[in-house]
Length: 385
Ligand code: SF4
View 1 (cartoon, protein in one colour):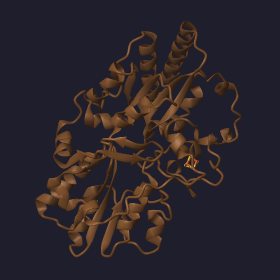
View 2: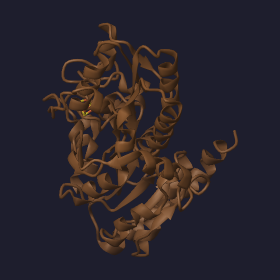
View 3: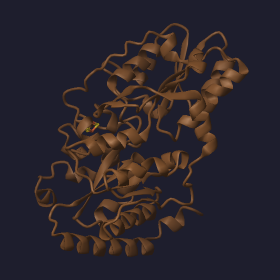
View 4: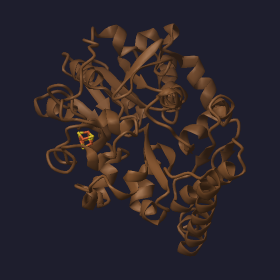
């Protein structure tokens, strides 16, 4: 299949892994370095590609992939799930959501459990579906659970504009949209995590372009390569990061040229800028409150803001004690190091959000058979960190 098969060619993959092995060995030797190179794949889509295609098993021990926070469902805090359930259970409400948010546990219930108890909660594939439901049900209030990074924000923005243009007054947005750049900055400022380079999020960059990442090189001197999601994309991006390290330079580079333009998508950005503004701060699961990392509707669209219509509890609620999603999201723990991974916490019985979403790191490990590492002793590769 065009645009798929050529990015999964095993012969090319072997050449790239050989190149990675050579570059890594030379770098480690020259720098007299004993601890592994830590490269963060920001996006959950990369995490899944890595485990689905077994890329982690063909990389040298001297490269450690750290799984980043680029899974919007995973970083949704418990309090916001509770707020969503609060709205969904108000009289006369039809609450619409993407399917992967349904099973994220709140403090008492998930949306799926609230639905089982009678709330009118419907799965949609886009905000446009939610707007259609609003048109069909003028006597009901239809709320769309807006989730996602910059990749999904434009479709929400355009839908809100459409609702305004049509005068649909029973459509509301519960915005949990977030932005990637402040999050990467928060990770770089974390003393816990010393990263050597990044594989940047391809789909987000398709919207925002390359420029917003320049500070990562200018201020933090870390290589940043925007990567596609097929196995050869990921391997080639690692080669590009290694070349930068080898040449002692640092740049924002684009491996995903077949989709990502340097300037992003100006039409999408214009719609986002028209409809949304940055919140002063927003809470993330595991990462705490991050300044200017969440999006809310501008005053001109306040009539569509579910947070203005409903007095949501807006409480900050801690994760369950057993849950170590925070450490996983910060890259401090591997999923199999969580005490409940694969036992009390599975995709069927998730305790934390990282096991729910199709982009979550715990789900990636579980679904792609990394259970053999379930009780792996922290020796060997880890001993060199
Ligand atoms: S195994 Fe479950 S509880 Fe543990 S970090 Fe992963 S999702 Fe959270």
